[in-house]
Amino acid sequence: MSGATNKITALYCRLSQEDERLGESLSIENQKDILLDYAKKNHFSNPVFFVDDGYSGTNYDRPGFQSMLVEIEAGRVGIVITKDLSRLGRNSALTGLYTNFTFPQYGVRYIAINDNYDTIDPNSVNNDFAGIKNWFNEFYARDTSRKIRAVQKAKGERGVPLTVNVPYGYVKDPENPKHWLVDPEAAAIVKRIFSMCMEGRGPTQIANQLWADKVLTPTAYKLSHGRSTNAPAPEDPYRWDKRAVSLILERREYTGCTVNFKTYTNSIWDKKRHLNPVENQAIFLDTHERIIDDDVFEKVQEIRNQRHRMTRTGKSSIFSGMVYCADCGSKMQYGSSNNRDFSQDFFDCSLHKKNGSKCKGHFIRVKVLEGRVLSHVQRVTDYILRHEDYFRKVMEEQLRVESTEKLTVLKKQLARNEKRIADLKRLFMKIYEDNASGKLSDERFDMMSQSYDAEQKHLEEEALSIQQEIEVQEQQIENIEKFIQKAHKYVHIEELTPYALRELVSAIY
Image 1 (cartoon, rainbow, N blue to C red):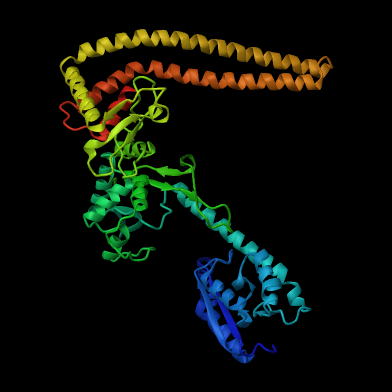
Image 2 (tube, one colour):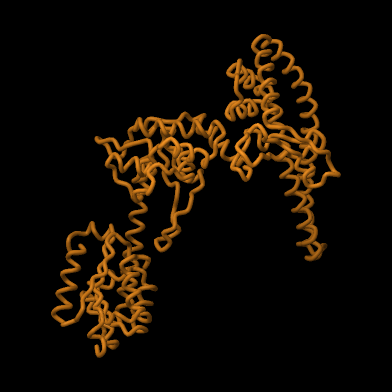
């Protein structure tokens, strides 16, 4: 203890949410009383508390411990005292690293009261058992984690919402906290956000519009209604972030369903949450009132997955990714002027921009393209309205001719592929038997088997692609009916919106 009398006696307390359920004996106040009483009885000077309330012992990324570590590394701590070894941590490897290396390196004495552990006496039998105790503390953490995961898994598979944060647009049902009720005021904003996305606006544009209209952010809205939130109060309560908009647009819960297991952690040591594939999630339909219809939600996901190219001015077009050069077939790229005049926006051939000698300079203004497409849609929908039966008859006859020709070619190709795949399987069995009998060397067998295997995989992939194309061709007649239904919906259309354009395109292809 020589030279440590003027140093801090660090009294470290930790309580996790799991520990809190075990009762008052592990409470922070109880730990403080024990530690302070021990320090006074043993005349340890300058006692200072370092506290982590609600933190797991499985890792050391805790604010209280890190503050104590800063003091230790600065040479200002002489002694560290905890109620027991588990309060320091439940990761046996890291706990041993701190007690056996870090603390001695900075001349710090460590005491775990209830475990009779004191580094001042390295020959103590209790110190010899510290490693076993650390292992047991880790085992306890693992066992507790397994039990909690099992409980959460059982709840999630029953359809009980696992999220503690109710999505913006909903509130907890006072009679059943696991059930959500629609919050009309916030739900109206959610609908507006989806509507703006359907109109072709991206998250940044939507966020800026909400900011301009002085709409409270989700956090500010909850705080204004006296509801708790994990996020701090924003400096500007109206400054929406594009990430908040994106999260709202991606939440399937707005369609009235509960979605569990959207994220997962790799282990109790790694607290980072990873996104779970949709096929591994548990989705329960109609668990609460919907705010957004299914078709609107799916269409928004489709629009967002298009990832329209934006210009440096932050503008994009509903035709992005759909316009191709009439001569070379290359995509035409969207461009705009450096001002807010949308009438100057245009599409230009991407190949011509790279190499003018390979394609002429094809160029069209977006306003002109919109006008021509809208005019064509109006003519087609009006024609179908007046001559639906004739339109259906002509289109079905044309499709039957085209589909019959394509199906004939595709089915012949599929038959050739399947025959060759069967031949390759027989050939492989033949060379296998020849190799086993010694007629074919191992080197020759390896070369031939690799060649046959590569060819078979290529043919199987090609056969799958052909089969999919056959299914598409066989569904062409159904697509006519879908297109006619969509055409009825857009008769007398006056404005070409992103939603209308994509509905019509999806009905054709």
